[in-house]
Length: 276
Image (cartoon, rainbow, N blue to C red; front, side, top):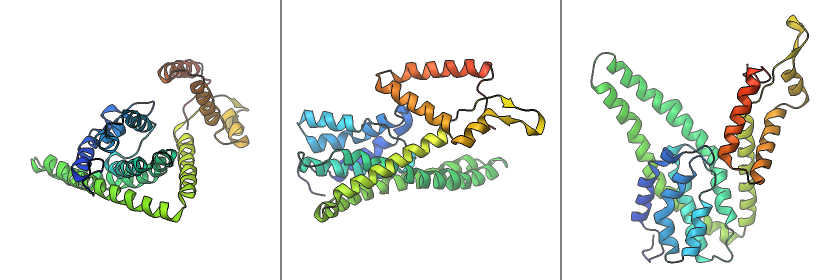
């Protein structure tokens, strides 16, 4: 890491690490952890763009887009983003800024899967098992060991990923630029990002209508009929409706309130039902 004024140094990366800790304190339903992501990048962006307030403003806006992943590994995409922003500052006119968010989005799903399985599926279970076994015996080491077993790897890996992500972003970008395949990488990242968004829609949006045709064991629900035509047709339709309303400049919060009210009314009349 060079030491000129606009080059990222270890001190700046440490600030990013510390600012990443409260990543989810500003979590919101519209763009999830975007505020925390942008907050963690502010020291680096100020270092990169210096007194260029116009480019600093554009970079802050770039990182206020939707983002969500396992918070314990978020320093990896954070510092790759920092390396890409630093590389952009060297050639503002030619660098494709879309590639920054595309790479972020491409990493979001895979590292979330790895992070969730390790931290929630393995480490938390291990820490809880050891801590609970001691706590049930009245041993004060129970909660202490739980906190240590979970948080030492948490903060250790998060800190290591801070510097690894920056080195990875810097070296990979240099190789990509020298080989001339940046456009292909950007295209691949956009495909992966859209795939992740599509998978999130299928997984997280549920719309089930009530009512059935026939009686007894031979009865067929309207939901089964729709699923037989196109599985997930109603969630997909609802997603496109929300996108359409957002493009028409409808605010997300009023839209959420309206959707909640409509769902309560439809559920009351059993037009919508809980999924089985």
